[in-house]
Amino acid sequence: MEAHVAAKSPAKVELEAGKDYWYCSCGQSSSQPFCDGAHKGTGFAPVKFTAEKDGPAWLCQCKRTAGAPFCDGSHKALE
Image 1 (cartoon, helix red, strand yellow):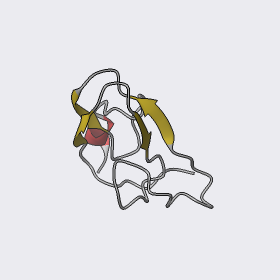
Image 2 (cartoon, rainbow, N blue to C red):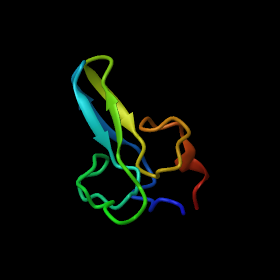
Image 3 (cartoon, rainbow, N blue to C red):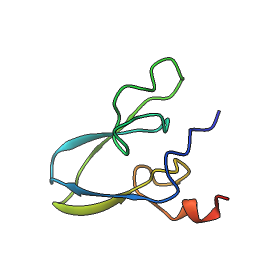
Image 4 (cartoon, rainbow, N blue to C red):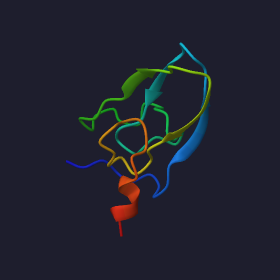
């Protein structure tokens, strides 16, 4: 089962070093790119990650990245 494509571009977010975040892996969250619990009953689960540094980051919203939660440009191959 593939995740829903939430958007065909990454989301620029500001992260805080040492803080835990929950990345949406199902594509159904209304709080993209973060989890809001919409995955319940889908077989998907959020991806927990801890920010390594303060500042901006580009998080994947197409849900096809090989390096979740960070964008690797996979959205460019989507039609």
